[in-house]
Length: 300
Image 1 (cartoon, one colour):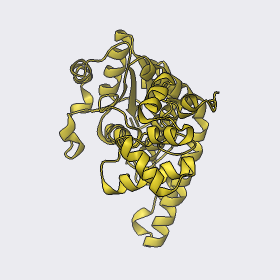
Image 2 (cartoon, one colour):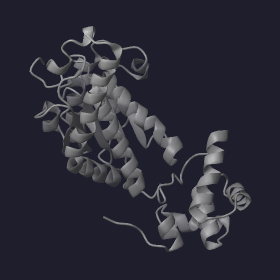
Image 3 (tube, one colour):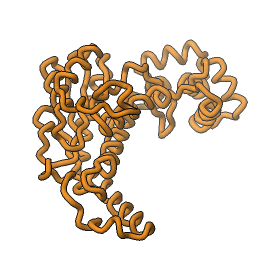
């Protein structure tokens, strides 16, 4: 462990405890600015992971994040944000955390060291060959994650690993190995800092780009948003107005007819279709507004 980049001492912050607060924060901010560049270097592998996730969801499979500690919490956080943002079913994108859901709040010591625990968690989740498993391990050597990736491969599921060290052990157990080399932390070994930020950025990209490819975004609008509270009801109305140029009252009426579903309301207003016709056009177009309205799709 001591030889890992994420565990070595950062000489730039060797006197952290003696720094004035302003200097301490500047040092942290300077280090944080290196994270996005480290992620940029991993973009080709992240693109491969997006392709694997898109393929899994198109064939009826799931995107499953697996991790321990901070890594697992980041995966779980990304998963729970997908239903309200993209209208996915709760089971389509899920996160598994070593020690169970309660470990999100209270650490379960030793859970990350048990590879068989990951096997049990994946079997309980009904992992199948249709799914894609994303194993998150900042160190790149977490036994829980390695056990999960091995089991997923044996099951025939697609596998992706995310680590913050080069030549990570988890990389050997994944079809797509993402290594974001973030280097020594400001606070030695505290991978909730730069490494955690890198993992969050990768998860942001993976889920968002996958949902764009699946037609859950129109332009840069989250057209499958679930309007489950006052804020989101207002957002859905604004999305329909922005996507169609309609007056707010017309957008509100279309949304009411569409049961609050912005995507259906947009197709109605762009084409003059009824709600049922718009819903059918979206079904035939695999949920894509561009396909449903005949305005073409972006590929690449």
